[in-house]
Length: 125
Image 1 (cartoon, rainbow, N blue to C red):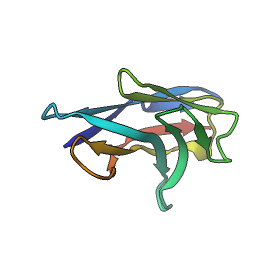
Image 2: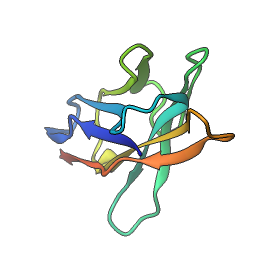
Image 3: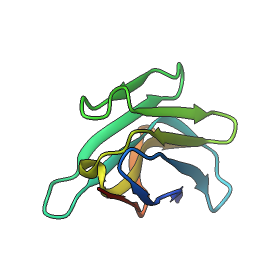
């Protein structure tokens, strides 16, 4: 089973920065191909929303309007990791951040969606 493990959450004052990381792995050692990895977030009482995404073959990136110019997503293809550099954090960025990936395990005909457990980002004003 493919696992996505996040790290890097924490507490910061408004205007500060945090860097999230997500690593994809397969416990059984079975190989897999990443189509894309990205980040979603969910604040209390709100629906989960898209934050940013990076496609694996060419590194193309996409961002939610709310984070453009402040957040940067990047991939390390060799390490099968994705990072989210978050600068100029705002109170409204506070949420539980989830790593999400569309990944095809070797032998499978299609990709499946995988989610991490989430990492908390707290922003104080």
